[in-house]
Amino acid sequence: MAKIIDVTLATMQSVGTQAASPLGAIRCSTVRAVNDKERHQIELLYYRGDSEQPMHPSGKRFLLPGESLTFNVTKRLTVHSEDEMLMFDYDLNEKPSGPDDRGEIYQGSDYRKVRFEELDGFQTISCSYGVVDGGGYTKKINVIYTVNLISG
Image (cartoon, rainbow, N blue to C red):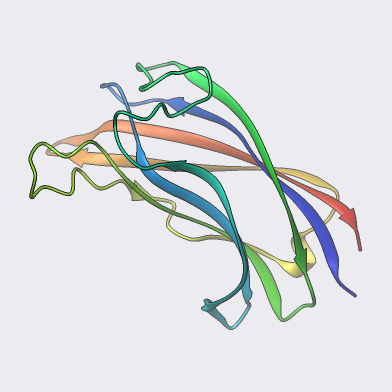
C-alpha cells in the first residue's frame, strides 16, 4: 500500500558565527530503499541560483547568526511500498570569491533518509549544514522539515 506524504521545508536558522547565505538546492525525493541513487520522484524545496537572488520571498539575502526564516514550502510525494523511502539531500555553497571559485561547500547531514515504515503521522526532522573553516563551522544552518502522512 502506498503512502502519500506532505514534506515541508519549515524553517532555516543560522547557528554559526558568521552570516549564512546558501546558494544551491535542497531537495526531497522518493528513492529505492536498497539503492538511493535510483530516484523516483524529486521535489525542490529550496533553490537559489546566484547571490543576487534573494534566498526568501521577503527579499532576505542572508541570515545573521541566530536569525531564522520561515519557508513553509510543501511538496506532496508518494512512497509506493517498503521498497522505497523518503530522502532529503542538498547541494549548497556560499558565494564564490572569484570567477573560477565554486564557493565554500556546505557539509553536514548528507542524505537524510526516512524508511517506509517510519512514515507515520506527523514528524519533525532537523538537518544541519555548515561550512568548515579551520577550527570549526563559521557558517552553519539548521533546517527543519516536517513530514505529514496524508494517507496510507
